[in-house]
Length: 536
Image (cartoon, rainbow, N blue to C red; front, side, top):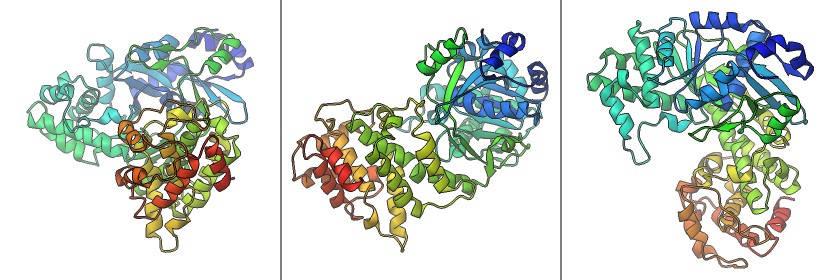
């Protein structure tokens, strides 16, 4: 059997016998409804969109709670549209990988049109037409944080964006330039209202999207290449809103093991392919069962009723609290702790680390005992319940091929948020003492030990990419296994507030981190023995 509309209609009994849940709605009718009166266009045709947002809407269509589908647009890697959507009639096999070892097989049919955001392609005019529809309520994005950047790391405007600023909406070629050109169509159609919703995994994502849109609008107005009213339009929240959101769902690249399941079921043409832009795509996506999407409820033209599919709508400050809860306490710090020690102890899967008694107790203590006391309960997600799901369902999931080596990437950029904010919160709380933090410093010491690039059996291993890697590795370069006097060499590292969020010595954690480090480098097996001593 092949994944296409004809197959799921003509061979429905065979698909269902194999355990696949099929669309329970008339896709052709839904497509007609959607193209006539679209309410949701999504930019970014990647795996998380297919496994999360598209599936939420698929469930609502199955439950007859809506009769409007989704239009997806891809503005960076056009091959995704042809190789993951058009070739399969815009259908996706979503393999939900459950912690109990079961797999839920779903055919997602909510995407009724997939378009290339390519000015050289006819799809571009179709997209313009859809943006001019009064019914459009939401334009959402999963294009990664760098997709919103209009300046590079040095604060300079890239040549392509600078050219777009001068050329105007009719000749835009950059991703955000093309998005803004679409929004300009909506403005010309009568300054129609819409919500521009970033669903990318970055803090205050709505502000990042708005900053990019405003930059284009301002430059176009200043350069006289668009109507002067466009800038006021994108700055008017009653016309165009940019809600914040928090998204959380682990969606790895297509897995060989999942592809093997599909082949065993007799599904044809399920091999994943690598596009010329290094995107791995397939007719299927695999993802964990847990998912969270919290969105600021700011929609000037109304919105799809996604709350009936599990999406949470709330105030901006609550979105911020949920984001901080996740990033500073309930997930990301635990991930980082596992990444650091997993690399040193030779683990290759996060799920395998969750079978390790010391590592499990390490992250539970960091989360429940050291982190929870300073978490502000956002009200819509209970912080303890969130950690429960992380340590009992998400991280132990044997299907999830996530590695400590991947999570260890860019650790120097993560420590200040994932741990430094907790330390600062302890300093501000008169009922808590920073000296009560015992295992967060053990993570800091573990990272310094990791930077030596030597595992617990004293074999060399490759460090994960990090923008500060050369700088921080030099700080421990002349430390040898068995050294006991390390202060003069570690002081520069542990006092760097740009890395840890605080100067560890000034808050009383520098000496403790050094003590742990000395024990971690005592000899072969010292990392395991240190974990047993302080965690076990």
